[in-house]
Image (cartoon, rainbow, N blue to C red; front, side):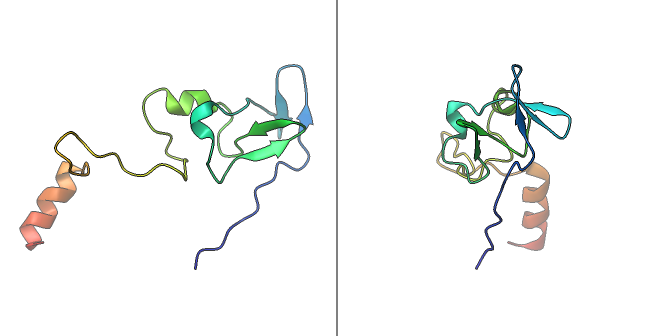
Length: 94
């Protein structure tokens, strides 16, 4: 049974630039972040406490902090595997 940790942005202050939290300006989440367990609602907006600019995490594929996205399946129907790990598994006979 996994523990769920309550995510809060306690002490965050809403400014004109965005949400100020521990000296960082946090931007609101993007549509792809909806459904993630890390999202925290603060003063009418939704923010990611793990990353200040969520849009940048999604720019080059899937955000590595996303809890609602699983490994992608390629066109052949197999899950993508690191080639180095695959060769080590083959050498062990798995």
